[in-house]
Length: 283
Ligand code: NCD
Image 1 (cartoon, rainbow, N blue to C red):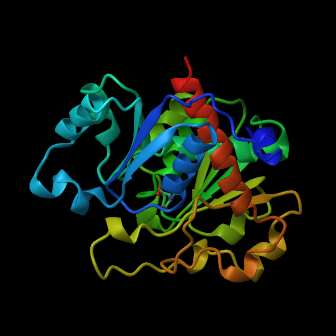
Image 2 (cartoon, rainbow, N blue to C red):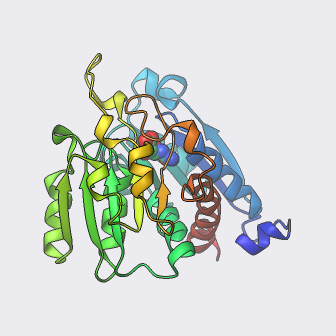
């Protein structure tokens, strides 16, 4: 897919396919990335963003009925982002066409994890024996949850879980690490482990999942000069984006640092989603 795009080509492998993008939660990258991926392979798309307010959900229609409607409208797949964990699963139960989870509340974000491992692989040429730090709001962020599942499938990886105490990884993921014999260590201070890891995966404070007005001190989970002076030259810093002011975890001043590869991630998102759509939809 990367080669195809670098050669400025558009494939037509999905020319007879149409994909519905149903987004109940805000999104820039994931939605545009899926649309671009579909169109680069010749598919057509229909998108409803802000579906909570602008679709029949606002009139009380259930998710299940909306999915039945998309089946009846002869779409070939639905990409869904919802604000509750389990939404994609509920949608799939009533759907004959594939449902792709583009983020379900504080649940999972599997295509983000695919693009993240594709980005990591492009740097290290392996997904084994890596030391990975997950940093920030690990309680509410879904990207680190999906990435935990994927990276646990490879050998010898070790996780540093860096979060303010009340924002640590949930027990279900810790149990998954234990079941697979994957080692992990918890801390609340990024500078303590910054020199020990190959990948630093930053995340924002998920303010939309917190009670209004809750303030959390992000001083110890922020990239700053002290942290960066410890980060090795070969270490990469990822972030699913958006960066935000909640923790101010990765300030604008670090955008051009060669260790920060957050916009490479976006390109890998396009390649991965093109590959996924082709895999699911090509006859
Ligand atoms: C992530 C998400 O929506 O979970 N963003 C994304 O899809 N790139 C991360 C986030 O919103 O913090």
